[in-house]
Length: 253
Ligand SMILES: *[C@@H]1O[C@H](CO)[C@@H](O)[C@H](O)[C@H]1NC(C)=O
Ligand SMILES: *[C@@H]1O[C@H](CO)[C@@H](O)[C@H](O)[C@H]1NC(C)=O
Ligand SMILES: *[C@@H]1O[C@H](CO)[C@@H](O)[C@H](O)[C@H]1NC(C)=O
Ligand SMILES: *[C@@H]1O[C@H](CO)[C@@H](O)[C@H](O)[C@H]1NC(C)=O
Image 1 (cartoon, rainbow, N blue to C red):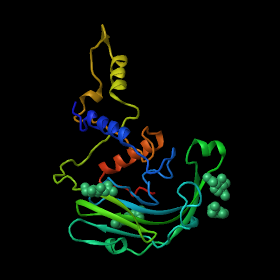
Image 2 (cartoon, rainbow, N blue to C red; image 1 turned 45 degrees about the vertical axis):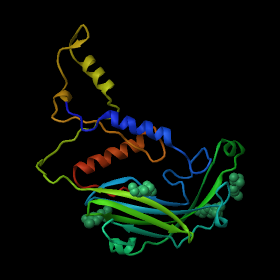
Image 3 (cartoon, protein in one colour; image 1 turned 90 degrees about the vertical axis):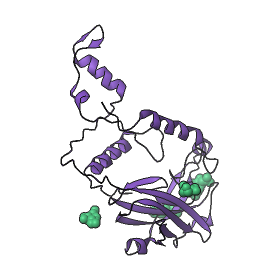
Image 4 (cartoon, helix red, strand yellow; image 1 turned 60 degrees about the horizontal axis):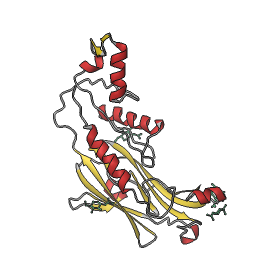
């Protein structure tokens, strides 16, 4: 059995994340996952892509009407700008960078409770949003990209993206990828013991899974929960399948 991802590395990442989560404001609940500032870039900072994959950009500028972050009388800035820098001397507005038309502004509002006191008092914070989406974009050049969203004249949200080079040697022609749900080592071991003849707790045969050329463990991540729920886990699997097929579908945001 070969493991493509060391479980200890992902555990260390999780522990690090647990220790270092510090909300920008003293709120129990987040206004929006990955967006501590009033300007939001999706995919957020630390996103990783494979060169040539398709993705969407979603930008949001928030104007909380009330609550501890109330801003600009609840009027979101509609003149926000996104610039991308490829770290190789090319820095441009999103439309010039991708050579696309500008997208129409979208507006909506949402409410959330800042903390348990607000929830008990039934006083949700109202947030107005101005937003734009750029669909089906592609970055062909591997490297580090820096994004800067400027809004409310003086405010900025930054993001770093990494674009990875696809494997150079593409020798596999047909790949069958099996993705198990709820299949940690403990469950696989239990299945091996229960499903096979065993003597004094020692199994006498192995499963097909044990004989596969490659077996790996995958960790799923959620932008607003440390413990994943089924839906985002499934989304991750979908991406994983698309990755394998070298045709990453744009993740609709
Ligand atoms: C939120 O948007 C709805 C329309 O979608 C509108 O009727 C409502 O007045 C808005 N609420 C606030 C507080 O702006
Ligand atoms: C914000 O305004 C809404 C609608 O006016 C109200 O229902 C809510 O209680 C207010 N929230 C806070 C935190 O003041
Ligand atoms: C995305 O763009 C590619 C060409 O780059 C096109 O083949 C594909 O159909 C587009 N997908 C969507 C969902 O628009
Ligand atoms: C982006 O990367 C630079 C250089 O590593 C770092 O200083 C900066 O804090 C990062 N920005 C964000 C938003 O993660």
